[in-house]
Image (tube, rainbow, N blue to C red; front, side):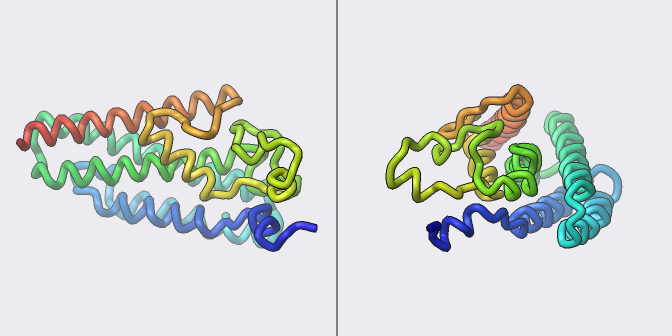
Length: 218
């Protein structure tokens, strides 16, 4: 019989993902006007307009529509992030903003990068959160989590009903942005390899910008 903790792991709690989306909106509104795409409220308005029906469709069991809306949210915040990053790259030589402001903006975009790709991994791996929850346990997916490689025995039995939730994908995305590659989670699918390479490239670009700006300040 599975323990309560295992049953909790198997159930994909969506509130961390919702909070992550809200955090991205907050980070975007904190950017200076020179790095914002249109009015500062534009991204937040679009995201909230998509987030509300996403929550409603989930509770009503319309998982097909929920998945489309969730991917749309990820696409919107990805577009705004890349656009703001491009504006940051062009703003550095012009010295339009104070050094501290530019450093804080780069840090905000780095954190956004982690959250954005965590959302993509969470939404796409194993048929998305609903697909993973419906299967009861996670044995096949785009990422090979350590729990999926355990051999028969007490450890395997303990994690028998395990399924990754948003925190697991956030951990994967954080490691990809800090180490510029996945660490304890090998990438299996081609689409996942493309996404992790893209995330690592964006993270590396932001880190290089931070380092270069720091050197200029010194």
